[in-house]
Length: 126
Image (tube, rainbow, N blue to C red; front, top):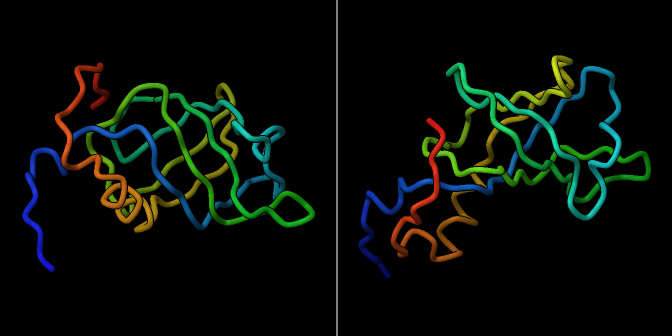
């Protein structure tokens, strides 16, 4: 079954996405990242100069708190997320690690029906 979509809505801003291949410089995830809400971090997405903030929560962690899958919930929507882009995580000026935006982000986005809704009038980060 093929369903048409509005490309503008598909490319509309988003706040949540899944990351994979998480790597921590210290080898250990930051404190709180395995909690229900995750931990609040600064992040750099893509090649632009903008630093954004949001929560990272690890999914399916092992006994040591490690996992290569996580969910990011940004404080403000970002309008250019795409699978394969890197996200670098910071605590202040300290670089903690990085991850890659997952293809799963698109599956979750399409399954949610968000692409069929009108974009909200929230501030957009570019």
